[in-house]
Length: 284
Image (tube, rainbow, N blue to C red; front, side):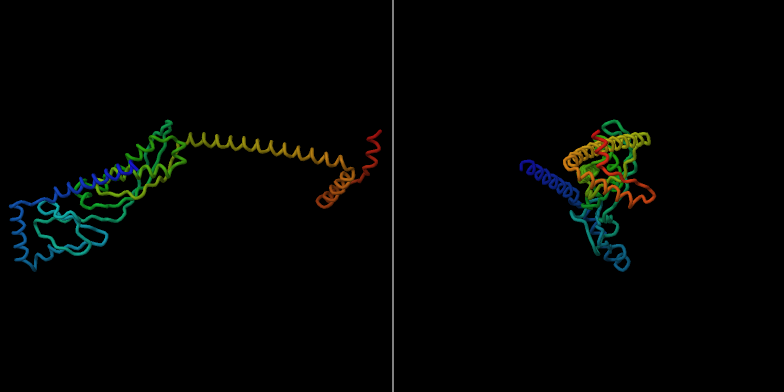
């Protein structure tokens, strides 16, 4: 509970700091600034039939507009979607796309914790959650997120050994997502998903791992065959004890064997020999 309270308090402080930063940027324009705005509005109204094409802006449903008036952000909230008006010469409108964007992380040559060089690539899905922060806090949010994803991939995989890299891809992706989301929060970026696409091993390591797996399979096969022979010998021993207790069981087994041979191997000639005769010679 204490950890959760601390995390919530940190989030609140972060939100308050962001709001304070935005409020500082959306401060007053000053006397000269308001004078320029009034003059711009006067000329826009005077030349209304012409300036209407410069004053009206349309923003799509998946977009938001950040308006700078004389270099300052006019409002804490981005404009849109729909239609709105701006003043010519004083207002600068920047459109921000809110749709989810995906990009491929180029293959990275990474040295794992157990000193194995592998090539790993992935894919990242992110979107803009705060249009004002994505415009005011970073020059190019998309490009910065791409570069940060590459370095984060190297940093995260550098702490893993080869076995963890091959077996725990989901955990590695979740760790990368949390690190990226925390780092890009100040840029107004929300990282929705990170996936590890492919892990390429050196050819020599692939051959060594294949030989090791083949040797392990052969060892398991030999153990299974030895266990089967041991079980079969125990079953034969038990069967011999049962047959020794009942002499007629041996005769029935003999007739069953003849029936099986006659059904499967018709070209084989068998001369039946009574067991009583054999027992007579065995006694002598």
